[in-house]
Amino acid sequence: MNIEILEMEETRAKLLIYNAEPQTVNALRRTLIADIPKMAIEYVDFHLGPIGSGEGGRVADGASPLFDEIIAHRLGLIPIPTDLDVFRFRNECEHGPEESCELCTITYTLHKVGPCTVYSGDLEPVNGERYRPKDPLIPIVKLDEGQAIYITAYAILGTAKEHAKWQVTSGVGYQYYPIVSLDSSKCRNCDRCLEVCPKKVFEKVDGQLVVKNPENCNLCGACVKECEGVSVEGDPTKFILQYETDGSLSARETLEKALEILAQRFEDFRESISEMK
Amino acid sequence: MIVPVRCFTCGKVIGSAYEPFKTRVENGEDPAKVLDDLGITRYCCRRMIISHVDLIDEIKPFS
Image (cartoon, rainbow over all chains, first blue to last red; front, side, top):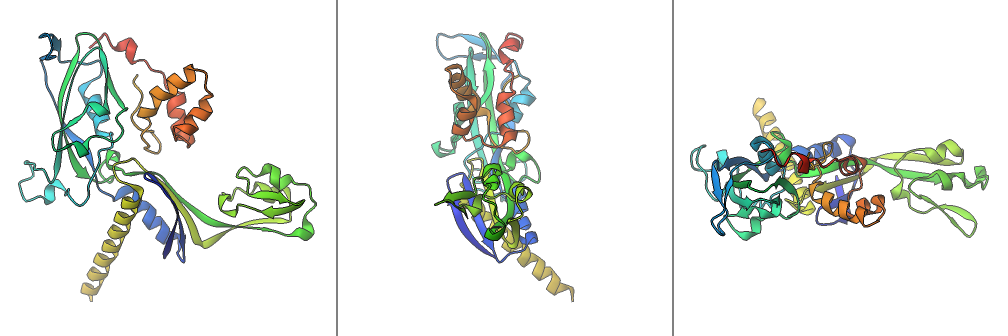
């Protein structure tokens, strides 16, 4: 399996994979979705009772319009910047399962007094400024006059097998590499294929129809229905795979981690086979 | 109620796009172009924004 990078942005990637089979690419897709670890808020402590605002001695009620469970869930879904070289799973840490340390937990505090909107950017990381959520504009809850929120939240490492809040990627998909060919002897110069194509694969150059952007084709077959001279096929050894990340990891880090996990899994499988006799 | 943090279908974070979307559309921009500009390209994510009814202000007084 060879991988060529077509597009690589901070949170988005498009790859060309060749010399591969569908099952291999699907294994990579499933790994990208479910097996990449990342940090997400898992435990939330709510301060109950009156909460002081700190200025003028105003005291607000420790309550908000949403249920605490909903706020905790919304906090969990916020992407938290993750450094996979630093963090490890809590059950793999040296201390007991009920304890926590800086290598397995990021602690956040959130203190706001209404009326206001509480955003993800209001989460104050205790472990260091680099763990501040990259997207500061996600609304968590709105507070009215006399309402306040005071929260301590703990983010731990997890994978999407347990909960979708630990899912790094979204929109992961692959398709066969399209082979678009034109048989000029059957072309009636009606330009229908050019009109119906939603991806602008064809173009007219000097009055001659040419396949301009074959990589844009999504194998919809609209052009084939219009004209016998066009044929669209998928190459079953060549794939275009694309995915997005939620910002907790970069697209490149995610891919590297996925390939590392896949290699490790095949290695473990090979070992257990050789022990079987 | 309040805008969901992520798209129900694909899991992309869309909560942060709602407020810019709302203000820009109120200022007369084309909603489709605003969504493209905010990087919300799939129709699962787009429906999260365009079909959202923001009722948090209605229930805010009742805690």
